Amino acid sequence: MSDCLFCKIVDGSIPSIKVYEDDHVLAFMDIFPLTKGHTLLIPKKHHENVFDMNSEDAGQLFSVAPKIASAIKASFNPAGLNLLNNNGAPAGQSVFHFHLHFIPRYDQTDGFKATWQTKEKQLTTDLVTKYADKIKSQLSI
Ligand code: AMP
Ligand code: ZN
Image (cartoon, rainbow, N blue to C red; front, side):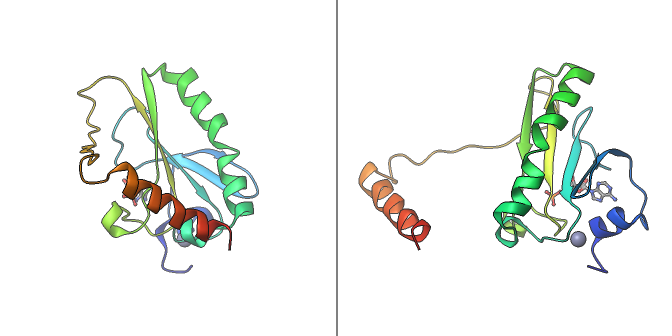
């Protein structure tokens, strides 16, 4: 896509610090890193988000994820690592070309925070079971 930032990184018209490349995917360093080693993995083909990808696209990308994660672990020995993928602006997506963040974690003050306010009182087991049935009916289409 001509006006997509990450497509421009793929075609080389915008510079990036690359760490891995094959026929289908590219991994490069995030320009505003949250932590030491923060890396992005993208498909070379433009896909806006996960809803725009099929199993083959996803397989090509996710099959490389353990390799990138292991290289980050071997390089920096982080205490943990978050894989993060935002789909849609309300979910925090700011670049609309699918990307998977690899965020090595060092301690509780390393700059990464996610609030996780569970709603088990409102979302009862009865409701959750209904939601599961709804998802299952879509999966069997
Ligand atoms: P998201 O909010 O999930 O869409 O994340 C987009 C990520 O792309 C952010 O972490 C940005 O720092 C990163 N980013 C934006 N422009 C560039 C660039 N030119 N090179 C590398 N990373 C970038
Ligand atoms: Zn793109």
